Image (cartoon, rainbow, N blue to C red; front, side, top):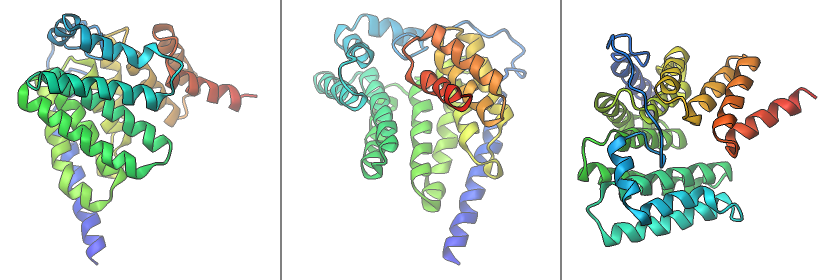
Length: 275
């Protein structure tokens, strides 16, 4: 009976998320204004952040190293980047971007540990990412991408946990995605994370593929060179059985980012299935 009550409470919490977030439309129909064109550099679409990173040689180097050294496996690359950024936070603990990128790297490590089925390490890294992103927000509350990734990583925490995590953290997911969208509704990073939320939340708990598609489409409209929006739109089409549309999206992503592992793996899957 207790377990059933927890599940019902979790469902209620996630429905609240859907209702709150649905007050904003990713397609921008409420705004009635043309979307601002954006560019994603250094993994961010925030113009001020881009300028700050360009002026910070050490942070710029740490971010670039994530793709530069192809001789290392993904985990080693991410751990190396994490170590470099931690050193930056120790030298300058008031820099919000250092903690933001630390959280980004730690979020990627979560993905690595999940793919390796190392749930213990994944959960530990989720907690580290949460603390990093919280610190970034404490230093600069109006940086939308920190809120967006905090909502994203709490979503991962719920996914790896159970009903109790849903009860505890679903309101935080709501709050952070809503705040990110309020701060920067034309930010493609924010839009993709919101689209992922709609895509992977179960339908009965507020998941909505149409809203997910609207977020991904708007992301690629405002930032036509942002590969992630095409990749995740392809994943959505995969789930809907739209093979031709999915392949087209993956191919467009590879035109932008020829070394993108996710786009390549998705296309490889189709080649295998079509043999």
